[in-house]
Image 1 (cartoon, rainbow, N blue to C red):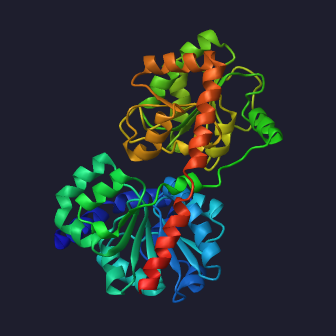
Image 2 (cartoon, rainbow, N blue to C red):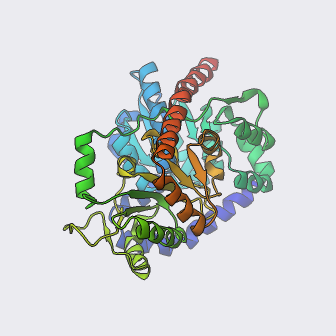
Image 3 (spheres, rainbow, N blue to C red):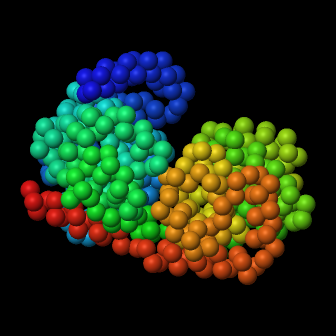
Length: 429
């Protein structure tokens, strides 16, 4: 199975060469990402962490980086002098790590999972321990960690309903990979059951909670909120609906539902933050088909009227922008992408609406839904009905927002528990 995996990985990388060339030409910064992905790391980063018993945390993209931030803060409190290295897969994850994890001594792009690259990079860095955030299981990298006798810990572990069935097709390879992990700190009882069913040693599986509850969520003062509203062109507008992390296919449902809101609230405004900000122009064109005028967030001139929709085409602003919404829709959920982080709007005390596909965030979704802070819809018509019902009822909005804040407050502590397990694994040697 390992041999077959390596053959397939090499074939996929070779097939991707034309894509690499195209992106190298078209995308600023892709050259650096590509170089690091093939194991050529920045010399200053290597000097800062190599052979210094650093703690290496790997988080794929933005969501995982958000979950990593509280863990890094707890590590820094417990071990002030230990170097910390963060690795990511995506450009957006890299930018987010640089922005919110100032405690890190270095941020790099994770190497492609080719057998010789894993050994080369792990041998170059020689970390004291390697922390996988959520579900980042890469066979060759784990084999390299085992070869250099580096303990591996999974933190904030989660397994989606969808992936648990996919992983079972790789049972042999998976069981071998999981045997390399010394301890599993999982988000929920369901995640713990899933990882055991996949081959993890049940004696090494613990439920520690979701570290995203421990995140230092963006707070916004009244003056900052006013400035943000003005910069978005929302002065005099209202109510404001914010749709975060939307995917292709969702925006048509949102525009249709929002048109119903506009009929009752002519000054209503909609902000859409697509998961892929490169789709901004596409969404401006799509909005026009629904007789809605849209503009980019980064447009140099903001007209005081005439725009119904703003498309967020920046990275790292969504957490703050949630504060200006009267109601929040979290994307990836009316289409089958598994949803996105609903704790950010919850931390602002906002009523939340999602679609039925929340399998990647089942634990936090269950908590918020159970407390009445989050409502679920299954269609554009139902979304329009729910938006109008919540907007028409101030008491409902307040109750949903208050319950959201309560859930956040009651579920903190996962990052601290994760670092306790980290210390225990290190003590075992």
